[in-house]
Length: 147
Image 1 (cartoon, rainbow, N blue to C red):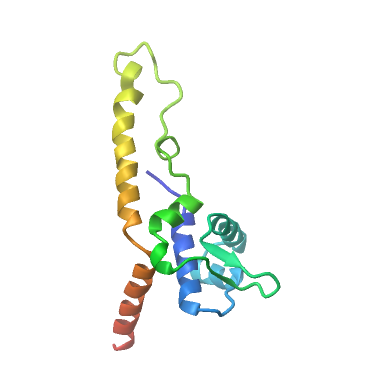
Image 2 (image 1 turned 120 degrees about the vertical axis):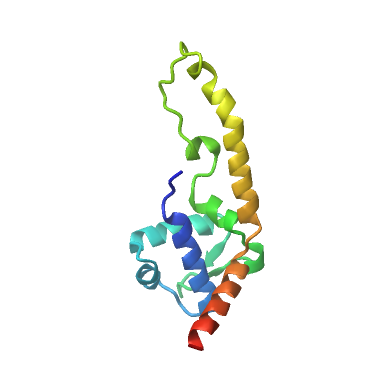
């Protein structure tokens, strides 16, 4: 299963916003940190805003989290910026033969297991909050500063 970098770039963006407080974080700053193009950053801003994860103040251009970071899960972020249903994640070849004894029922036998995999992904990522990641970052940052 191959995904775009939208999810991980979005997490890094949100952590930058969280750690920076009310300091203005531009798409150029995020671009430098993530290595992603500023155009992609602005597209992700829109998706995260539409999902209710961030808010952008007009005039000042300051972007902040819309919710407490403890209430923002990795699954919330993932579903805001990535396709996440079974048919988007796992593609079946469009010309599976109905004449083949395996091909005839292939999608029907495999799909429930793929749905279970997406459910497991959802459950795992729902249990990790942006706050938890920020706490883990702070701990690692503290350890690195002491060396």
